[in-house]
Image 1 (tube, each protein chain N blue to C red):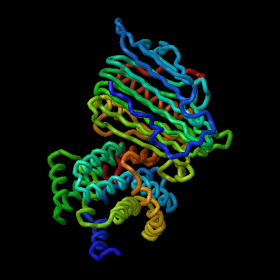
Image 2: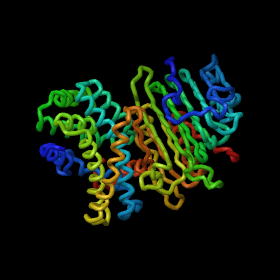
Image 3: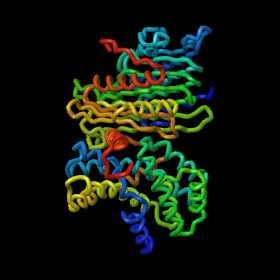
Image 4: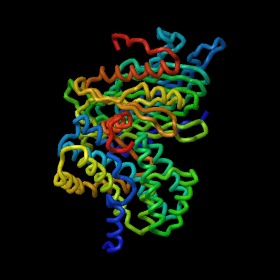
Length: 305
Length: 229
């Protein structure tokens, strides 16, 4: 397996760190998760290896998906509450040949208000031939003055399918926080095992500097979702044909789909006024992906989610 | 002070009549006007500002990098940048536009000026060794003609703004006076954007225009069109 890059935070920021909080690397400041899924002797997909460090917790893999009972479903939780100043997280998700998994988080991830430093997440996702992963975490809520950097490195085999989604809110609206955060830097890139680069996307959002309400940026939307589907070209073509791009002014919801470079898959973007509508659109899209790849839809979401 | 010859060549390369096919694209404006989102002078000005900023933080960084690599005779660096453009242009229509216009510009530039690196690059495009994207073609052309880095940047941003404003005249109710006022007011931001772009490393190329991405997606999927996809 390829060795993973050093933490994104080492190079992602020039923000001065003054040691007024628990220092970076202190106990509870460096969350770590490594999950390895593979097929057991009976051909069942299982979470074979798990390693973790506080504050991250991984729940036991459960097989509760009624449409796909062979799918191990895993929730990542944080015992520390929101991401705070100086937090560094690292998540490694490995799916071996033919295995499958569904990964989510227990609740929305808040990026707390920050004074001196930033919070960062580095993710490494690797899918071997024929693997299938749905990664659908709950939304991220950046609070006032939050600064958050993430890097997601994906290594995917040509016959594998990855559904990767992220949803970002404008802040805690109830507290009057609408794009009151300082900075979001979201970097996602994918390669083949031989190093061939498939695509890269870096989004940098600085509400103070950028005119987010400009036409073409977020305009009057408060929530945006970014979905990457890496899948073989024939599945991508089918999915592209089945998925509409639309702007629904009544619902205040818009979505668009495009083909990624190097025929590696698709990107689906959703903008909305309300979180629930955007979440539903992402889930509906995931259901289309699963139907094409596995022949079965995603079941109805739990009412408490 | 810029030489007269350089100024004239800057005007030539930035002219909408320069035959790279820019007039056939609208950068998503067609869908934005169809859905009534870009509907007047103010919303059009915002949209042009959004797209000009995206150009400054993506294609302009590549073009400047290419320009500098031409000066250093680093051909490998130029090909790496070319490959990178394809990887960060996630919208199919934008990729197609960049490759189509890049090739046209390379062909034209090779006829206009004699430059070994440009010729080698065009040969590699023809042979399928490299993609031939627009920002790389622009960087090479400006370096080959010994125009300045800042002139290259101005030409790119002016081009982005002009494509959209030209398209606006054809697909929404707006006058030439309005489009020229928009261009005139936005030009004042170019200096700040240039300072950002010239300092930016390739790994920091970034973009954030989700609504514009959806406009482009609508255009890709749509059947009605004045402009190409």
